[in-house]
Length: 411
Image (cartoon, rainbow, N blue to C red):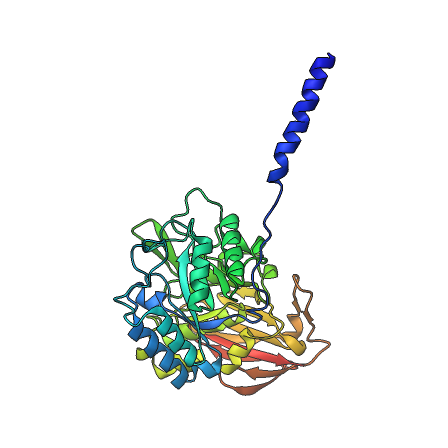
């Protein structure tokens, strides 16, 4: 018996000794404070997919400056999938496509920076990107050093071809790789919300996608032949429940790049932009600026709406009510202000007759309250840019199909 006990004891000690090397856990380490308000900029994917090149980027940068987009707050240019050659070089380094970018990526980034803009690139946690270019799996630290050397400011990191790895560990590894490389780079997680990144990604990323890809329609589902779907902007707005409490300064729920200026009508574009501002989503345009209408530009540069999105409180809005296709969305703002959006989801015009006193606002996640029996608010219509009375009287208005009216309430 003594012999058996001694054997068990020695085995236990040996096991403990061998297990000692397996207790270290790598902590996440994003660069803090890079996105204290939702990032704003332009991304190439929605319009151009992999058909991108040096000329497009330079023209986009020039228009962002000349059109007033930069002054409105849009300051990132992000090249999505397709910027690299199909193979790495003999040292395993990524190679920017020399045909698409004949002057070199360093030159292009310098050009963008010279315009007062920031520059971003795309890659993927898998072995290949979604379009079949070299992915980062197994090259995380090498790629991070490459991005730091190039001088990029933003990395969008997708989730295709990731069989056999877990999202949390993959994104944590890349976050640490970027931090180790030594250049502050905004880290945008894009795993489509399948693994609930809002529950774990705050220490490693500045923003995370909450859905699959957007599609330029109001409320449709577009089914791709490869057995996956893209979603109209209202589908995405409704897709996740109870996640707003996870969003805030430097850790944003990302509702995807916008489709404003892409195939929808101006009214729907206006509704789309209003909701993305109400939801504190990053505001990345996805249209071709060279063909942009004056109406599209006016929607994208509405400074009153952008101020709602960029409010320093950083709280995501929520749906207060929905009745007969007429929805009311609310968002608490700093200094006791509120943003209120009326949205007509139906195919017919509606009449609004909103009694403030019978519709108090209670924010269950963050504790903000608006009791219109106790406090009177001045009302400003943010699309018309004019005063609209106070909350002493019912708010009445006609609202067209798929249209919005967005108000700021000021105590």
